[in-house]
Image (cartoon, rainbow, N blue to C red; front, side, top):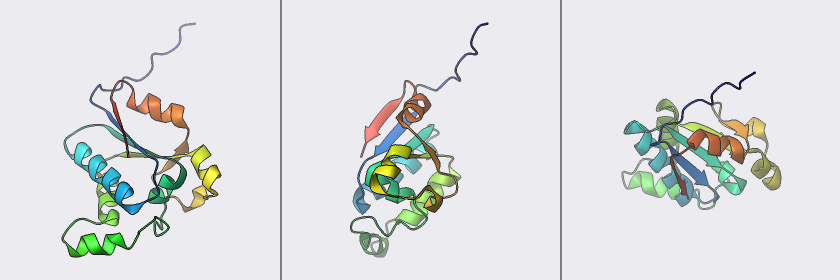
Length: 134
């Protein structure tokens, strides 16, 4: 029996791989995600290791989390606003199962739309599109 065809992934899809647990990198991962999604691109943000902190309900464990107050005071969108925009723009958010375990983080503390999966799921979601590592 023939296997069903895999769902088509647009060639302009964008994958963002967030490796770092620092606020500046997490912030910019969401800047890129929301910006690309606003332009109509299909975006998947995959966080692993300490990058998973950016997908937590409480992201205050990010290194230099106080930076968010400084950038908000400068009139730049903070991490909460960017995460909300990304979710509203249907950015797919994935927390790496192995990364969560490696850092001792609980999946129960992730934002509601975040799924837990592995790298193969991320790569399949991006397909022939671009991958940016932050």
